[in-house]
Image (tube, rainbow, N blue to C red; front, side, top):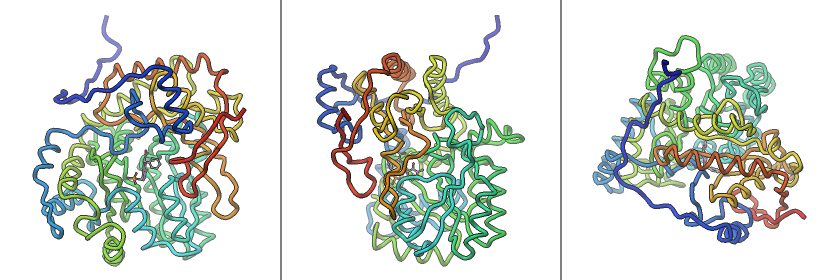
Length: 460
Ligand code: P71
C-alpha cells in the first residue's frame, strides 16, 4: 500500500543538549501561586517545556556559534555591522540598516521619526509593543485587518490580509495624517497568520494612491513567505528566499526583531530605503540604543544575526520549522480542542473562549487556561487576550479583543516531536477537565504592557 504522505525531518542533527527539569504537581502549584498566576513571572527552572515565546529562544547553528568568536567588539565601525548590513541588503533588499537591541528598539526609533501627534496608523492588527510606540509618539492605531482574522474558526488561508476598503477609508478620511501603513508578516496576534502577496500588492497600490508609505514588521517574514509558497496561486515554484525579497520590495522599510526569524538570541534593526528618514533614524538611535554601527548589540550578536538571516530563508529550514507547529496543531484538532485555524507559523493558539465558556472575558479565560496548563504538566504558554490588549489610552477602559487566546509558541530548532506529543497530551487532559478551571481577578496592574508583570488571584 503506498504511503499517504512521506514524513519530513529536521534538516539538522543535535550536537549539544540542555537538560530540562521535571517538577511535581506540588512544586508547580507553589510556583504558579508565587508567580501571581502569570506565566511571565515563573522562573524558567520551574518550566518543563517552555512555549512562552519563539523570541530569542532559538537554538543557534554551529555556524552561528562559530561566528560569535569573530565578534569585532569595536565601539565604532565593527566588522560585524557591515556583515549584518550586507545580509539585510542581500536577503531583504533595503538600503539603510539601523541596528537596535531588539524589535521594540527599532519600533521606538521608527515611531519617533515618522509619527506626530494626531497621526493615524492603519495596520493588519495591533502588536503590543508596536502599537504602544505608535501611541507614545502621539499616533492612533487603526485595525484594518480582514474580518476573518478575528474569527478563530475561519479557515481563510490568508487571515493576515488587509481589508482594502477599510484601509482606503482611513486613508481618505485622514489626508496627510497617515505617515505609513503598518503591515506585519505574519500577524502574531491573529495566530501567526500570513498576508498574501496579492493583498500586499493591493495595499501598496493604495498607499501609493494616497501618497503614503508602507512599513513592514518583518519579524516573521520568512514564515509568511513559506505560507505564500504553499497556498498562493502561482507561487509554488518560487523559493522562500525569492518570496521574502519580493515582500520586502513592496514596502519602504521594516522593523525587525532578530530574535525570531533570524535565529538569534538578541538583536534587531530598522531598515529604510528613504535617505532622509534613515538620516533622522541614525541621529535618534544614538540617543536610545547606541552608536549607529551597533545599536545596542555586541559585535558577536550582529554576526549571529547576519548568519541567522541567511539560514532563516532556506526552504528546508522553514518547512521543518512550520511542519513541527502544524504537527502539534493537527494533533489537537483531531482531539477536538478548539484552536485558531489554520495553524499559524510560530505557534498553536488555543481558543480560550471556546475552551472555557464558563469564564467571562472579564475574568481572563486565557490567563486562567495558561495557568491551568502549567499546573498540569509544566508546559508554559502565553496569554494573548484581554490582559495583553490592556486599556484604552484615552478612556482607561479595558479593551476586550474578540480573540482570547493562549499561545503555545514553538522555539526554532529546540524541541523534538516527542515534546510536541507531551504538550498535546497535556492540553487534552486540561480540556477533558475544563469545567474545573476557574476565572481570575487582577491584584496588581502595571501601567505599560501590563501582561508582563500583572498579578492575579482566583476570582472567587
Ligand atoms: C513574542 C514577542 C516578544 C513579546 C513582546 C511583547 C509581549 C510578549 C512577548 C515580539 C514582537 C513581535 C512582532 C510581530 C515586534 C515584536 C517586538 N514578539 N513585532 O511574540 O512578535 O520585538 O520583542 O524584539 O522587542 O513573544 P522584541
